[in-house]
Length: 124
Image 1: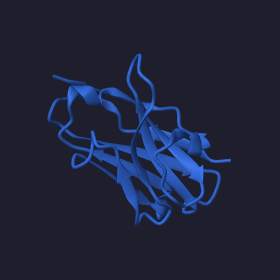
Image 2: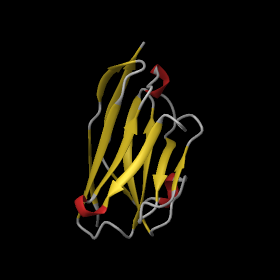
Image 3: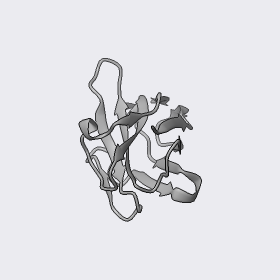
């Protein structure tokens, strides 16, 4: 089992920045590909970013490419999402997810472990 706990959400003005963190416990962290997803109120959960177990490979949704950066520190069992130039449409609950396997994935069905989510609200 892998337990995931997100933090770092909050309220920020448009154009501002936030850094989300997700700490994993329960298993060795490096073999797991990780992802960030988000769900706005009344919308389906959508892919945001993914990173491989080694951290070498990453992938982003087109809507966040160039503004968000995913990274990980395997020594700290932590994955990060640096969010810059935030827009009101980035407002959502952000979820961290882990998959059994080191590769990246954009598909939520490929992730077996999920955190509880952290709210990000961007005001205009």
